[in-house]
Every structure is written in C-alpha cells, then in structure tokens.
Amino acid sequence: MTESDILKRLIIEEYETEINDYKVIGIPIWRILRFKFRTQYLKSVCGFEYQTKPLSININKVLKNSLSSLIGFLKILFSKKYRVDNLFFAFPRLQKWEDMYFDKFTDPVISRSALADNFLIFQRPLGFNQFNPRLNARRTIHTDFIEVFSRIMGILIIPLVFLFFYYKIINIKKTATKIYLLPKIKLKSIAFAISIFVVNYTIYKILFLIIKPKQVFLVDREIFFPVIKVCKKLGIKTYELQHGITVGETPLYSGHYDPSIDPDFFLVFGDVWIGKQFGIPIEKIINIGWAYKSMRTKLKPINISKYENAVLVISSPHITDKILSITIDLAKDYPNQFFHIRLHPQEALNNVQEKFIYNLPNIKLVDNLIDSSIALMSYTYIIGENSSVLYEALSLGKLVGILCYGGIISESTIFESRLPFVYLKERSDFKIFLQTTSSDSAELEKVYSNFKDNILNEIYAKK
Image 1 (cartoon, rainbow, N blue to C red):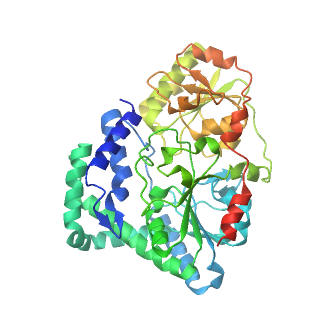
Image 2 (image 1 turned 90 degrees about the horizontal axis):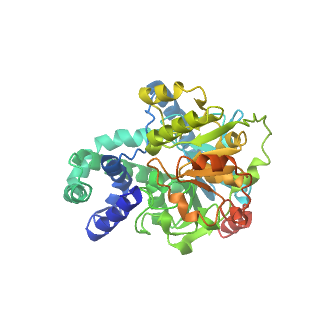
Image 3 (image 1 turned 120 degrees about the vertical axis):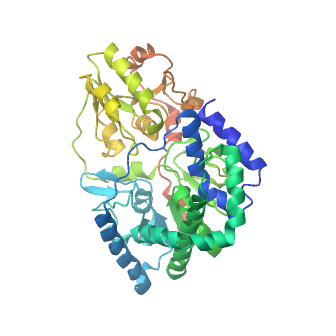
C-alpha cells in the first residue's frame, strides 16, 4: 500500500469512531494530535520520514529571543499603531534574497496589495531561531515568548488538564491505539498538547481583543490552531495561504472539514489546485495567484551562476535513500553529467549516506538555504518526486523530470496529461529526459497564476 492508500484507510477509521467527539474549548482534541499520530504511524509501517534534520537549540539564544519578543508584545499593549485590520501569521521557514530574509507566502501578498496599508506580522521562530534582517521588520512581532511561555505553563497545568479532561484523554488514547496500533502512546503527551493549546488560545484571545483585527491570514493551519479558534470565537475571518504542492492524501490536510477549527477560506496559487486535497470545501477555495512571482521582479537583481552540464536533484526526508540510490546509479551511467542534490530544509544525510555520494566526483550537495527560485535559475534540468520546487521550476520554464521508479511512486502523475513533466518510469528514461528541449504549456498559468491583487483588495475593503 502507498502512503496515500494508508491515509485513506485511516481517515475512514477515524470517521467511523468517536475520536472526534472529545472536545476542548469547542474543538476536537484529536485535531491537535492528528498530524503527529499520522506521521508516527506512517513511519512505523512504511518508513515515512517527515523530518531527518536534528533540532539544535541554543538556550541562551532562546532566552534572548524570548525577552525581545516579550518587549514586542508589551508594545502592542501600549501603542495604538498596533491596532490593525490585517494580521499575518507567517511561515516559520523564511527565504533569503542576498542579505534579506522574508516569507515568500505572506510578504509578497502584503507588498502587492492594499493590505500593505494596514497590517501586522506575527513571526513564529524556526527551531527557536529568528532570522534577521527581515523584510517588514518594523511591522513584525516575534512569537518566541509565546512559544516558550506556553510550554512552561503547559507543564505546570497538566494536573488541571487531567482533572478536567481525564475521561476524554483516556478515551482518545484507547481509540487512537486501536486505529494506529501505536502501543507507546502516553497520556502525559496528550495532556501536554492540550495544555499548550489552552495557553496559546488564552494569550491570543487577549491579544486579539486588544488589536481588534478584521481578518487573519496564516500559513499552515496545523501550527496555528489556537489562532484559528480565537478567530472563530471572536467572529474574525481566517484565510489560509497555500504553502506547498499537495496532489493527494497527506498527513496534514486529509480528513473532513470542521468549521470549528479549519480556516474559513483557503487561498491557492492557481486554478489547478482547486480540489479536495486540502481538506477544505471547494467553494471555500480561492485562486489568488502567485504573489511572489510579481514581487520577485521588484527585488534587487543578483548574479546567477549557470550549470550547463548539471542536473538539480530535489530530495525530501521521506525519500532520501531512494533519491540517493537513483542519483548514484545515474551518476555512474553518465560520468560526464553532474548531479547537484538539494535537500529539503528539514532533511539531513547520515554518515552512511554521505559516504555513498562523496565517493562519486560528479555528485555534490548544494546550499538549500538559497531561495529555490534563485537556485533553479542556475539549471536547465531538474528531477524529483513531488515537491513544490518542481512546479516552481515548470513556471520558470525549466525542464522537469518526475521520478516514478526505484521505489518512488509520485502523486504528481495525476497531472500527467496537463503539465509538461517528463515521467522517468525506468532508469533508461533519463536519456530521453536529457533530449527534451521545451516545456511550453498553456496549462502552466493554472499552476502559478498571475497574482490577483483585486481579490485581496476586495477582502480588505469588506473589513
């Protein structure tokens, strides 16, 4: 069974049980836990890896950033300039253009629409790290303090959570164990997740009552459930921005829409993404286009190195071994061709994997901190499985190969008849791929459409 098949079965079993009936502050507790359980189960049954890069935490930096963040929140309490209509909860992982960091999902939407007149950004840390200088820094509040404080308080109030929700916690554990066959589910971990949610919800409710936003935009609902719930409570419209390519079942999105915790609307890059894969009713999905494409033309040009005889290989944590195996075979078959491997930001190689590729002179790892749109400009040929970078490459006119062999089953094949991918279904297809000369397709506009600022302007006007 594929990961997609497994998820379809899990969704049915979740729906047929009472696991979504146990609630806290009016939302199913299971939604707070679901992504973690799903990824753990996929790892146990098919080796799925969501993250292989180890998390490194510098306590001194955490304390420093938390103090700075606290000062930012105190400013909200005492300054009217932070009373805004539009709140943005940016993606934790920022991009870098020369010496400036920015969020490629929210910052372009702000800069290319009327929302720029009245906004505030809440920036969540990535691994308790913040990246500066940041675009729109003067309108950005770092949330390090909330992240740290909610965990400390979460530990302290676990006894109260057990006192008020013990019956629900026990029943969730029993049902989840039955569905997911994970014997080491701990009651404390469930209680801790509830505690963090409650603390986050309380803090954001106080902040929103002070700021009085009319609408909230966020990237990745999973990490902003407390924010969404506050918005539902206070009658604030929520808009989630698409942050990656989703073409089938995923641990994050798959499941039934719940208006108590899912965003009101979902904003996508292009018409091709209007579908059920995001767990949002189709009538609530709006194509606003790809704002970053229009913002990029305004950024300072940079020098781009061209690699005429190199293929860029896009990897991901859940297929690292398979990607490396395929790349090594191709490097041996084509010794005069170079293969540059770009790891996912949450992916890292172990010692064994590093030895395999360092023994071949025509394979090397490339910097994955460089914004993907910049990295892509250096190449003509790009291969991978099912990454947003591949679709971005198509939008830039690159030649893109989808790997469908060596244990890789790509969900991207559902677009086979509409987009100019070259499907590599066996090792020998790589030769055909290198002979491809054009990726022209009228359908590309439906993948990353031109930004429709009028839609955002209408949202702002309705405030």
